[in-house]
Amino acid sequence: MRQTITSLPLTVYLAISGFFRELKKDEKGLSGVVVAVLLILVAVLAVLVIWAALNGWLEDLWNAITGKAGGIT
Image 1 (cartoon, one colour):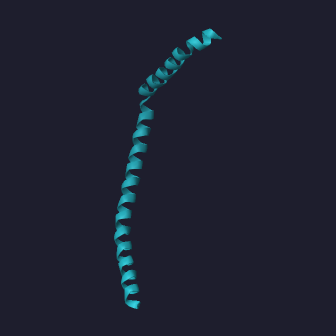
Image 2 (tube, helix red, strand yellow):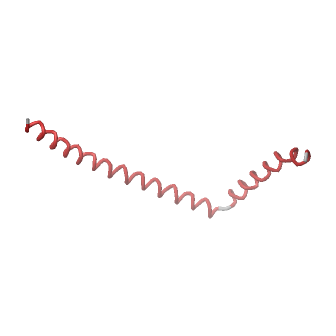
Image 3 (cartoon, helix red, strand yellow):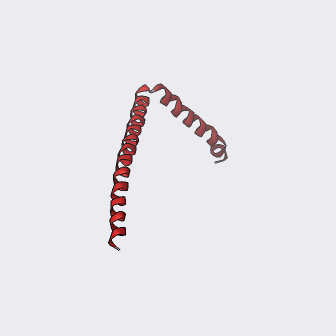
């Protein structure tokens, strides 16, 4: 039991370092990450463009509503 507890940090270190070493060798996995990041970036930019367009339209609509509401009284 004591032997297992003593060797546990070394085992964890070797497992993690081996995982990252294999990840660096696997170029196919890295291209997938790049594609995912680019897709997220395009989606965020699309949302920002749509939000900017809707914000102007909603602001005009709100001004029309509040202007008419002030005229009713």
